[in-house]
Length: 327
Image (tube, rainbow, N blue to C red):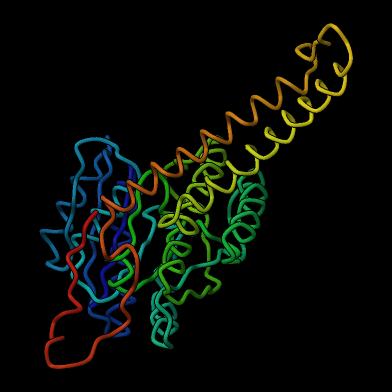
C-alpha cells in the first residue's frame, strides 16, 4: 500500500482538489493508497475540510497539531501514522502534480529505496530559484549526493527508510542525504511543477541561512555522527599544534635574545603570543568537546544507529524486519 503524507498550513482552498486528483490517478492505475493530512497549526478552515474528507472517504485520515511545529514534525507524525510499505511526501499547495505518482512507483520498483523529485522547470520567482541552485550545489559538494533539487517536496521512499532516519528542525529537506548515509539507494527524476493557485509561500529569506546551518548539521551527522572525535579532535589538534609551534618559536627567540645579557627582552608585546595562546586553548577545548561527544555517543546511542540491515535469512528471522519506529 502507498501512504501519501501531506503536511499543510492554511491550505483550505487546495485540499479538496488535491484529494480528487490523487483519487483519480490512483484509481486509474489501481494503486492501493491512503492519504494522511497533517494540519500544522492552521488558522483557517483546513481542519474542517480534512474532517469532511475523512467522513466521505475511509482512505483519508488527518492529524492536527496544537500549534505550528514545523514541516519536519508534521512529516514525522505522518511517517509514524503511515501503514503503507511505501511512503510519499507531497505538498498541499497543488504545485506537486499527483499525476507523477505512477512514475515514482515505477522507478522505486527498479531497485531504489528513495526517489527524489527534481523541479526541472520551476514555477517560482527568480529570488527563490537561483539561491536554491547555489544551495543544491553546496549540498552536493559537502555530502557527495549530487541532486538538482534536494528540497523538492515530492519524494517517495520505502517504509524502512522512515524507520531508520530521524528528522527534526528543518532536516526534512535532507531526507535523501540521510537515507544514502544509511546505505539506501537514491535516485532523482524530473517532475512537473505547477504555479501556486491559492495561498502564499511559507518560506522567507531566512530559509536559506537556516538551510546552510542545517547543511552543516547534516554533514556532521552523516560523516561523524558515530565518531565525533575524528572531526573535533582533528580540528583541535590543528589549532593546538599551531599554538604550540608559536609558543615554541617565541621561547627560542626569548632564550637567544637573553643569552649573555643581564636583563630579559620582553616578548609580551608581540601579537604572535596572543594568537598562539588563543590557538592552543581553542585546540584543547575542541579535543575536550570531542571526548565528551564520544561519551555521549557511547552511552546514549542506539544499536540501530550504527548499521543498517538489508535482509535476514534463517527460521528465526521471521517478522524480524519489523522495527519499532522511534522519533
